[in-house]
Length: 101
Image (cartoon, rainbow, N blue to C red; front, top):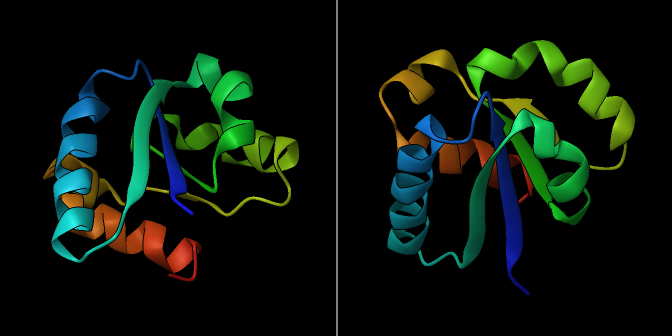
């Protein structure tokens, strides 16, 4: 079964490049993940279907609220360096750890 990784950021645009790099990094290690990014305003729409949730540094302030909404989901902020350098491999490593995969 495909694991679903959902990223939330301020608008969903800057994170789209990171998503592309994450998909390439996942493919390189033979993982078939569904990876998408959305603006934080869409958390109620896309959060429920996520197997893990990653937050961009600019929306990390919402971590407590999102954890309260989805207490059974692994949620973590993306490290500023990983995000800033658009390190798809680093972001996939965070997700894999959250997914125990």
